[in-house]
Length: 152
Image 1 (cartoon, rainbow, N blue to C red):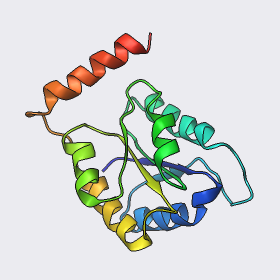
Image 2 (image 1 turned 90 degrees about the horizontal axis):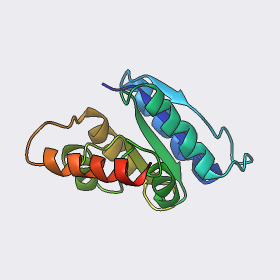
Image 3 (image 1 turned 60 degrees about the vertical axis):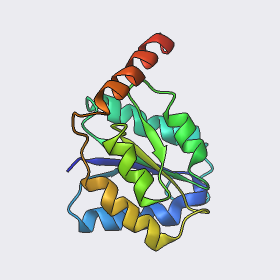
Image 4 (image 1 turned 30 degrees about the vertical axis):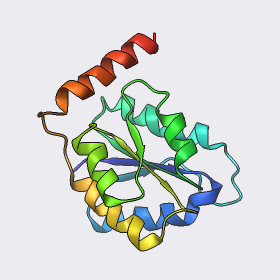
């Protein structure tokens, strides 16, 4: 399984701690890039940037998890980086499709939106999935072409 880089803002420290514990129990390596507590007001785009840069530096071998109040802001910020395909994953089907249809590499969650047990179930499913060449491959290739055109 992939090494995971995880980050959150002050609105999601609790869920991040739960995720780290779960991933460690699954024997998955986790790198926490912050924030460490709910008093740290580091803006979520900076946390998303730190996670994305770690993934890019790994040659895209690592995956990321970003958590904020809704998951939306982190997702938007992460998708500003070339080669990053982030998706808000608040149900199992979306989490599955983020990998299987879109070769996603970051799952975004909103601590204020999703219950803890559902979030854990989604994470368990997401980490075990791998993108396979198939009908979605040409679509992912088109996403990459759009990235290279727009991120010059």
